[in-house]
Length: 447
Image 1 (tube, rainbow, N blue to C red):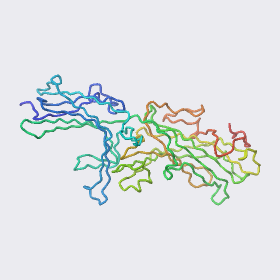
Image 2 (image 1 turned 90 degrees about the horizontal axis):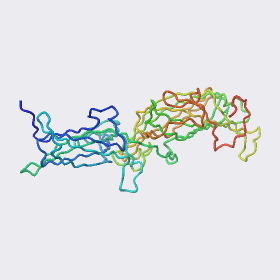
Image 3 (image 1 turned 180 degrees about the horizontal axis):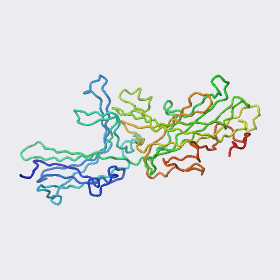
Image 4 (image 1 turned 90 degrees about the vertical axis):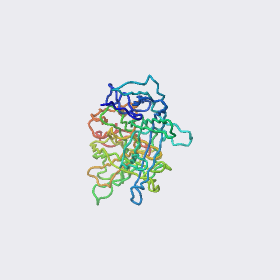
């Protein structure tokens, strides 16, 4: 049987070391700064009159269902945030023989950038951060464009095109092939979010009235607050990403000698989970997307899910009793003085999470939800929702224990104080007078 002879160029993209003898599992994922090297195999007897182009692109594609429920009218969008092109010239040195065929092996190399650049000065700095490869939501295949869209789909792809101009004709014959590449760039932490710009997005403070039972007189008010914790870093050698949330508690008794108002005897239960919010649009965002802003943008959508639930208990809290008045004098025994403490809550997350990102057509945001219960005390639900970032930063050191407290690292990579599920720290609260000392038994005295 006569050997196979292709009538036109046949292309195949080979990446190293993915397709080489030294391939390993970790070769499949690239990061910013990596060299994307390989060669293009062209099966053809001659490349005379053939133009060959190799393009490396980063593309975002989104879609949303048609408002009139017609699949052919689904709204789609595409945004190219990266494009690098190489024109390859074939020479006789690239030609090889393989099973009777003539094969050209044309080398190429691209450098994955660490960040994007823009000719505009007013572009959002977050848009210049290289996004990770993402495949989220439902898939839709556009018949007209012959492309796959998701909610969102962020892809990096190498495309090779050979263009031949046959003699005696004006029309060109093209052969095309492509290969996707998984990219997980280094994404450092951004500055903490300015909560005042997102009034309905988060809840960093919660005030509740405490009672011994439903129909009893109030014991006082408990104010609980938390700020944005350190980011989860998925680029860690630990089995899971972890961080710690500092939760401040301020208990203001109703009276100086309120019966049963003994916070140092309380036992707290802290339930935590991550809320995952994914935003996508078929038109560029006019502002940083939030759950409120998508309501006013007809072409934008948000999906939300919860992941990684944990429950921790704290049996012993180190409370401080503040005995100074606002004027700096010792408060009278007839006045109710506040108690304060700070919980250090370890929180874990899966390393499979997608890092926080923002681009013109899609975004990923995370919210840390803390549900706190005071056992054997009646109160309405105490829930905090604070922003938290998920990053991929190999240069970031591991989380250290606070103020050199006695701590150990658990197998899941999260730190916890001594043997407690939740630890405590003595931190001054800016909303209460300075601490003098405690009048409670030594067992519960502040350190």
